[in-house]
Length: 190
Image (tube, rainbow, N blue to C red; front, side, top):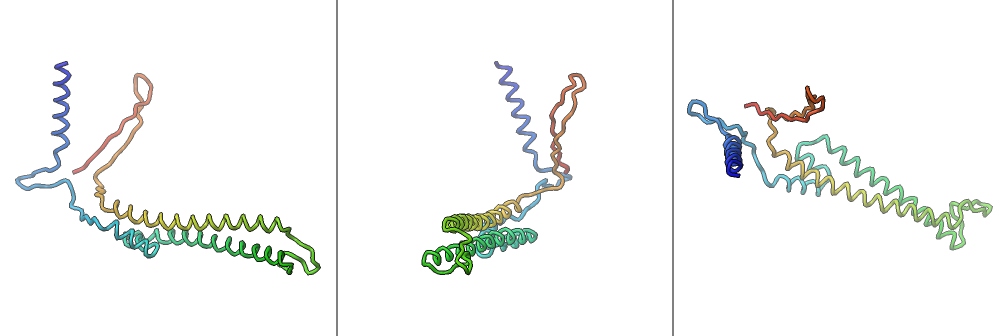
């Protein structure tokens, strides 16, 4: 029991000393292994605000210009689908109202022959209304997602991504047991 506590204390001391060595000193001058990154805590809020004002403006603020066409394609496509479904809904609704009033509609031939029944007009109205409402919801979701994406990206830009840090997972074959061993290496070049 006493040897286990001693071993645990030695391991904790070893790891605490080993992980706290962040600065090096060479001939009296200090060299920090961390780079000074300019941190702006309001940057994510600004990016989200700009994206809320005009979709894509937060991506431009983050200097991710290639994302702007994606934002406009997503929102524009969902608005187009909304407009298509709204037009079709209004078309079938107008035809149904004209038919109930006893007037000629676009789905009735000049000789009075009906190409779509009243039930078909009602079914078409319900389907296009459902699709219209769904496309409005998708438009709102895309709008909110581009705001969230701009804010998250502004957060992630502020992290220090150093070229000298690497992580390399490997799968190694054990020589004697002939079974795979999972291993990983973490490398920091100073």
